[in-house]
Image (cartoon, rainbow, N blue to C red; front, side):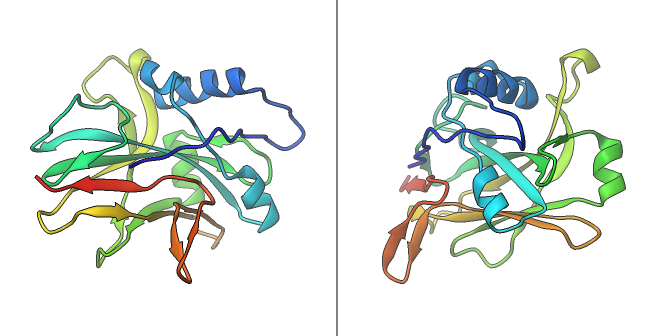
Length: 196
């Protein structure tokens, strides 16, 4: 299950109310459905740990595999054989500025990965325009990758999204899980995978 809290982003020196933030997040990720979702950030965690990058993320059902429900819509439950799509935008941890153009990404040498609990290798996200094959005015830029859920995976899984730049600056978004036998919830979201 993907559980998302009502945390708010607070860029440095600027007060942002929830409505303004959700409008901006929807415009950034380009989906009207994103407006109604519960968006969470780790601006405060990044500031406390002196991270160079702040990560905003959501998860939708992809078209790969054998989708059970509506595509490209945030969901809290997935079934074995479906595709989970991780979508990410990045902000400069010091300025709070969105870093979201191909030129900025290339100049900073950004790389974004997601590590899924129990999986051997991290997935690398790709930066690009979405949706593809639409007029430029209707596209939005963000990082994305899909993960086809294997038939042997079920239950609740945690995951971690990482950003690194060419100078070694990092940002980490840990997604809820269990640590030392206790549940922790820094950015509350778990993937719930049901058996097919």
